[in-house]
Image 1 (tube, rainbow, N blue to C red):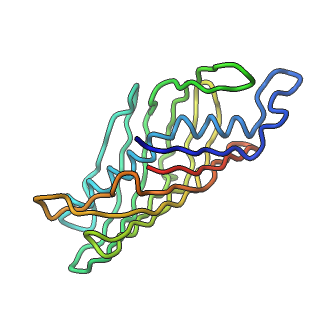
Image 2 (cartoon, rainbow, N blue to C red):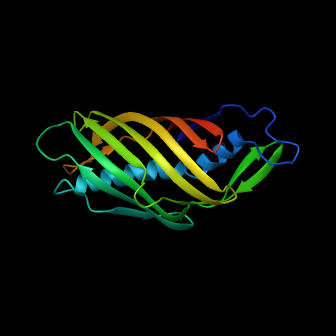
Image 3 (cartoon, rainbow, N blue to C red):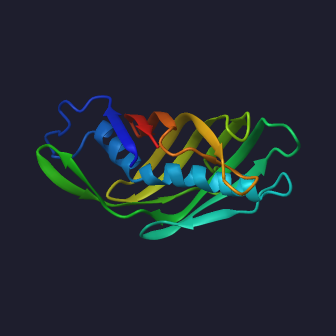
Length: 200
């Protein structure tokens, strides 16, 4: 099971006089709706890498748990080197992994957010694979996700991650070792910022 440690910058005084959440709490919720898609995006990137017969990978897609589609496109390095890179783009269309429940101000609150990405401004997922097949993974995920639902607006992710690689038995393919990848960085939404620190 994945271990998640998600740290907010400041939640003191999170409710204003009008009862609305503050911007840091909004950024936290904006991220939580995307949380599962981070691991899914990386996994689709590896699917494209392993299936690639040229620099351009075939689009790799997966449905959201409730609605929409997550699609990974882009390019991967070819050749005999055991160090290779991926330069990928993340697309979301009406994407939602469903409502999630948070504990806030001594209450349980259900939050539902749907995400889209803008054509021509897709988030960038870059990965470097070193000492394939049993070496290391380093990468970044940066870009903007548009939100509708209980949070409206834009969530901007700036994440870095690193972990271990392993060969897939019986194949020439490679995969990320589950549980070894640490993801850190920020999510910005409006004036709010949320710190991310998790293992997948």
